Length: 523
Figure 1 (spheres, rainbow, N blue to C red):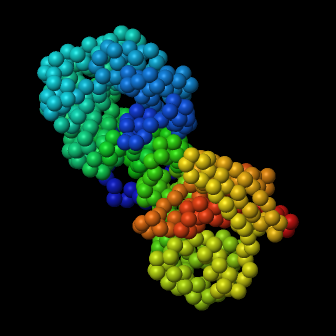
Figure 2 (cartoon, helix red, strand yellow):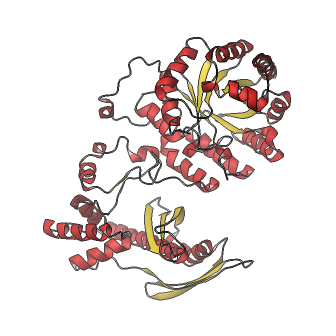
Figure 3 (spheres, rainbow, N blue to C red):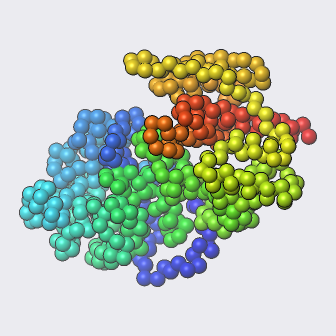
């Protein structure tokens, strides 16, 4: 279980809450998450995500909507066969054809749904309320008659007439539904209303209640937690908050808040949160804002001098949870708001200690001045400034880029030839790739893999300015065979050159770390 800082709860009240002891995590990434505009996952990619979700510890994986297509059915069947440590669910309308497709996939749970709001009954399916009740009872009975667990969802429940909604819920409960889901399908609820709404339902039913929230107003996580406050025992979430329109309630903040704020248990192994998020980001192509809670690049990154002072003294001064608990690492960066503590810490990471305060102050002012002018300070920029200010030769690049030739176009397969100087000795590598950056990285890998054995963990590219002449800012994370992480970044008007410089910078960091290790063992 993730660690809980009791100081966080000083002014948090749990009065008038009907909190369960534990909450089940029902993950919809492979179904609702794939409905994110522009996202299409192959069966093999879906299986990779499913296996990662299993490792993460979710209770249920909703693998897809089998009636949608042959490929979808294939993926659901594959996941049902390969995943064994959590339950696998499939989605179906209250139609026997849909349910039969789910049964063919041999899933553990069939999730049947139907609209219940007046606007959707009238304009989406054109059926009368009484007809829906009868069809719903038949569908739940049909699932249960086949010996499969049944989750029932009232789509657009939060915009439905409460008396009609309760009538449907009572009928599906009587029919044997194992879980009843409340869906805020268009994300219109607010937390206080959600708590009251769910409380009114939990008081009338005995069946386990689940909550499914969309993020149209940015309230999906808050509404999900409000539902748990009212007694909901299962939450439907997606990795990275993926989903239709503005997405769904994000798994990461929901599960972390449940355990660290509410003290409600889940089966999530939180140290795999960042790893899971990164995998989903890579396979879906949907990038996250660096300010994304829990798993964003900046979630545990500090620049402000006041904050860094506190972090160095005691991390909980400006961090509500420990980054390691969610698979993240703390970063202290140099920028416009940097203070002396940040600079001193950065110097120590370079092995430089016992520098007089006046010199650190002078260096800090110089760094702040450069950043204030809009310059992005990379690692190499910082090192160059330190060497100049302190008259030290602290960092010698073992690997230097001498020449880079890229051939690309249509229909030509991109290729790259890279010439490197390694301790002054010239080495040449050549490779093809899916793009010029990929080709260049593979050419470097051919030269250096026997020496470094580095694995690329993350690659991020963003434009710093507008227009076709925008500066490219590349940030990468690599890992060596000992599991050490090296972050690197580079800025250039050419995307490929920026990418190559970032890779080489990371390689030099790895060499430097290895040298320090050798020196330490020699002592």
